Length: 303
Image 1: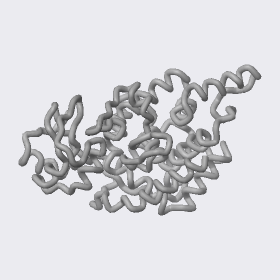
Image 2: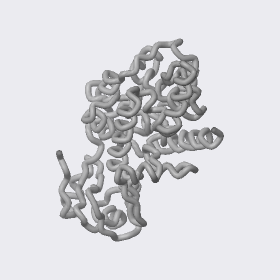
Image 3: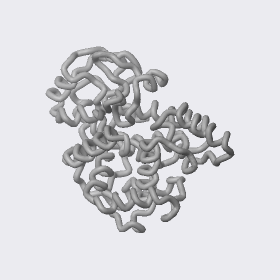
Image 4: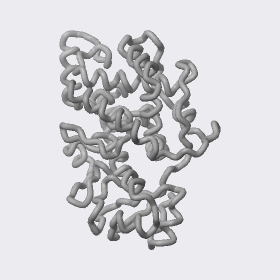
């Protein structure tokens, strides 16, 4: 539990430093993504339903700068993540999972070996086909890891038939949650997430997600102004198709900021020329995509 709290505090501090990376242009209410996400949140939470959730909501409300930073960090990735969620007809709450897992820091690493926005463990990454080499880490790759994480969530939901149990299992492991449920069944107790003696980390995990979802679902109720994030792509994907890639060279050729390229392409090695083996893409800020088209043979995937 101590390691988890330490990691969470580190990510919050990182998130406060990360805000300058975000776009600063004004966002009209009509083009803001939060109302769209809010309208598709499925968990119907009411104040007083669970004391732990109320306490976590109060914590976020008592730390408005931290809450603002955590939500702002999602900007480069949120539109893509949410579109993937919508395509699979999954709960909109899942778009908030990387806030809890990594503060939407694509380089996040845990002491247990989890990596990336979704903090995917090596074994889970292998199960979902995420490749790792000295040149590339699929668990860090934004698009690959998002697809793998959502596939994992779908599998967990199909197994448990309940989203809160699936979310708890994403943190604690399906086997552990199932064994706790079986113990409750043996003693004729309920097996919903609130009736289980969950590990503290898993309980805290579910609680934080519901608290965030409650605030995003009805910010006016909590007197919160959500940081505006455009309801449009932040980046375009340029399929690599076994082409050689060097982020330093691309930055020099196109004059796109190297740190921005790194933020969008955390799975790629920084210093090496290498051939990408597999269905991967180079992500470029949408407003800089013309620089790639003018200076390389790559063309964007607009589909």
